[in-house]
Image 1: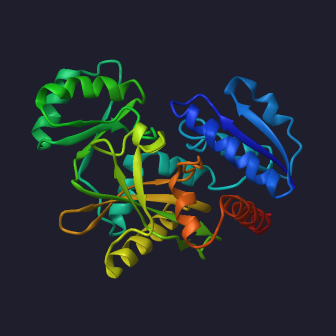
Image 2 (image 1 turned 135 degrees about the vertical axis):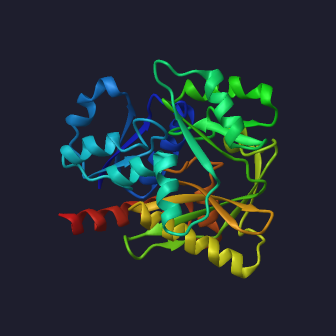
Length: 314
């Protein structure tokens, strides 16, 4: 097939996306595809509009890649692409909206509240409301951002105002939620819609205090235990809930679902990643290796699933 790979972009995850794109391009070439690599820039839409390809593989992360915007453009151009569509992408990117969907369907989430950053937004007044609503420690983060960018774990009151300022630089909506102490795990999901399966659960042991940007992307920044050393019942529950979350948002082909296992041994769902990282240190490929899928095989499987899904839609 002739496949265009979109990578780079303009979000805070640009460097990660460049690495993801490089890996995807190489894997597709190894599988015999003709590949066009595009460092996507919103002001250069002609590069997308003029594309003559069989499929687009989106290797973007964060805004303008993971939020449904590029998917909407490709839909209008009637160019098939790998992964979730506009609605699922937008819902997954909006942490507050996706949490509401999860709660309504019986998945356990951390208590949270959102605050809009508008012209008369007051850091002082917002801080007062947060302190009246939450008990320290709690998490302050942008509602629509990836890779923990703009996130602060607030342990002392004097940290709060700076945390709000930091989060507001990345988004017009700030999400505050209870800090859940426990094991960080993630579950990759892959498959045709309605026939998805969960891959082995991964436990993440970050070298830093929590799974921050450096822990995610620096070599040696975290340890991945695959499969996670959990009791069978809990493993099954995590896998079932990951598939359920993927389906509730209407995701397509693949996603990765993040959880915290709290001190009561209960899974607390954090978010669904519709375009999870595919760098050499990424989690999804680590899980796939356990069931015998090489990185190249994994990328090829996404292409094959996408071709089937788009044919069904057409």
